[in-house]
Amino acid sequence: MQSLKYVPKLMRAIVFRNYGAPQEVMELVDDREIPKPNKNQVLVKIECASINAADRYIVRANYFIIRMVFGLFRPSKKKRILGMDIAGTIQLIGKNVKGYQVGDAIVADIRKSFGGGFAEYAIVNAKHLVKKPETVSFEQAATVPISGQAAMMGITLCSINPGDKVLINGASGGVGSFGVQIAKAQGAYVTAICSTKKVNAVRGWGADEIVDYKKKDSIKALKGNEFDAVFDTASFECPGRYKQILKKDGKYVLVGGDFYNMLKLKLFGRFDRGSQKFMALTQEVEVTKNIKTVLEMIADKKINPAIQKVISLKDVPNAIHSLEQRTVVGKIVVNLNKDQPIYKKNQC
Ligand SMILES: NC(=O)c1ccc[n+]([C@@H]2O[C@H](COP(=O)([O-])OP(=O)(O)OC[C@H]3O[C@@H](n4cnc5c(N)ncnc54)[C@H](OP(=O)(O)O)[C@@H]3O)[C@@H](O)[C@H]2O)c1
Image 1: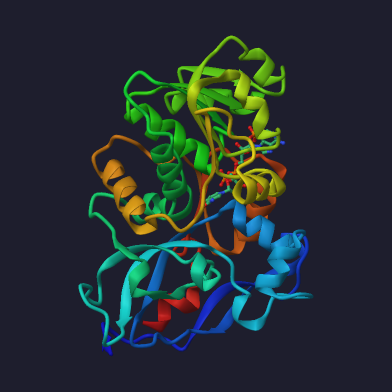
Image 2: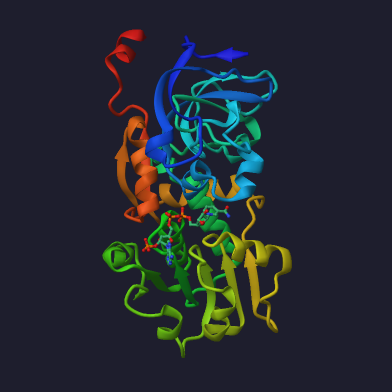
């Protein structure tokens, strides 16, 4: 085991011991044991993490499938720290891990280990590591593993050619903010759907046209259009409704929204019509490759993560609540170095 420097035994973390409202069930602790990596893992000192829709769904556990994974009545002891994506530096490295050195700045999607990002340290399996380009900040990098990656995967499935007309629903969210920018970078003409208060932000990310779904039924308003692709991160409509505004050989890609729409599409793909293709995104496809591609696009200044605000660890429950309230535009980043308690400064 290679180690850079002294690693403390205990860390600060946001822990949830029960399911419910984030501000009621999540608390900041400073005595959480720092996990130890096995021979295939590394220990990462987290610089930044980001808030994702997954955090809000898991803390409430309104879907039975979440309780099957995280614990039936309360989250099981090993799954009590949320936070699904991290950017930080490697502190300890298992003896089988190749291609990485202690001190390397990395980015990782840690969904497979059930989170752990709302803490000062996390264990990451080596196969989930991606090196952070130097010119991408930790704050920018932390937005990429879930939202940026899902947007890249979905836009890739849309197979965009320059000039294609692409419709993005849920354009103001974490995934949507990347989706709009990636589609634009690929030369698409982007029509975005979002709510009234977020129109200016979405326009700022490059959307060519915007439909405010609070003011009109967006699919009705778009009748007469023929989109090459629909990228849907807020599938609260029946996906079949999009048939009328999709080209004959158009593609509909569902990323999120209503859980049952996603399940239906995944299990039955029942909306396909002729050569129109309806797909639901799975998590398994080329995750690290997509993360790398998005990081490179940021480094090349082709896109810029839409960070609404940067918060400290203690503000995570409020931030998850604001995601529930739909007051977030783009992403909220948690910076572990913000508002560090004084004892931390004296410790090293
Ligand atoms: N498959 C994957 O790998 C993967 C990865 C990441 C995310 N996801 C899923 O993708 C979805 C979006 O994630 P996110 O991180 O972008 O979430 P987010 O930041 O909370 O954004 C959600 C978006 O949905 C819109 N929205 C919410 N409720 C709506 C409604 N009833 N009607 C119309 N629009 C509505 C919001 O728009 P307004 O605020 O403007 O109303 C917002 O833009 C989530 O379901 C998430 O679980 C899947």
